[in-house]
Length: 100
Image (cartoon, rainbow, N blue to C red; front, top):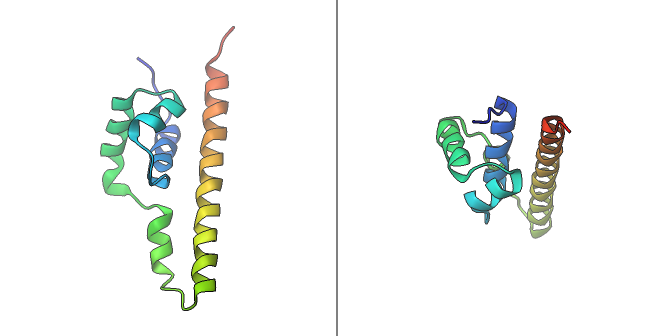
């Protein structure tokens, strides 16, 4: 039975929440964890969910189409940066697991 650090678990759940069209199965496969393991992490973190979506709702509504496009682009950039950081940490974690 593998033990994953708490940071990896948080990042995995964050990755799932940051991808609106993703399935638990696809995210689990990307990270190399069992689907049920990821589902359990999500259940545990469900009450503590504070994603970028909640922060963007606090900003208020954009007043022009250009502002709404800019806000959407900024959200996408934050999402992509978060995914990149999560995948970097996952790669680093799994590289440390390899003992040739």
